[in-house]
Each structure stands twice: as C-alpha cells, then as structure tokens.
Image 1 (cartoon, rainbow, N blue to C red):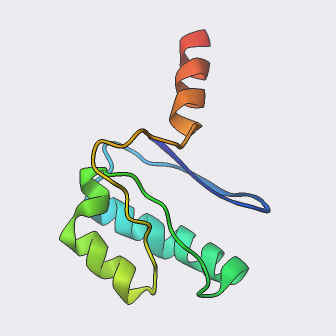
Image 2: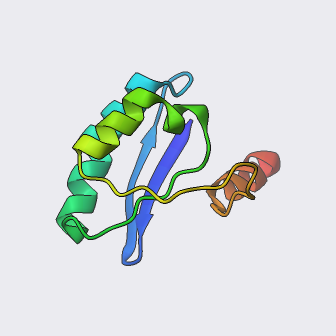
Length: 96
C-alpha cells in the first residue's frame, strides 16, 4: 500500500506499507513521518484530513491524534473521496 502526504507547498512524503494497514502501522507512520513534517511546516496551525477508513476511526488512533495535537477534519459518513491519489494509482496500475 502506498501512502502519500502533501501540503500546499508541495509533496512531503511517500511510504510503502508492507501488508495491510492496521492501527499500529498507521500510528507509527504518523509518529515517524507525518507529525515531524507537518509540525515543521505548520507548527500547531493545521487541520488534518483523513477519510472514514476504520483505521482512522480507531480509538487508539484518535487518542494518538489528540495527544499529538492534531486537529482532525470531521468527515461525514458515506462522503465522496476527494483525495485523487487513489484514482491516480488505479489509472497507473491499470496501464501497467
């Protein structure tokens, strides 16, 4: 699985996750990659966007986000995915 983090000023990070993304892998990814990069660029003035993936909604992840000072955007259930990354990966994988 490929995960990418971006910002208004450009691409921040890309990681390949072995196997399925679970709660512990996601927290480790946030702790090692997202938190340092986002805080370096924005301090504490940012709003983090996730979708309604079960991993994102897990209580352990929510606790980590709160303790790391993340303000997370509320995402309504069954909302369309506005992140085009999955669509781009799908197009690329279909072509290959």
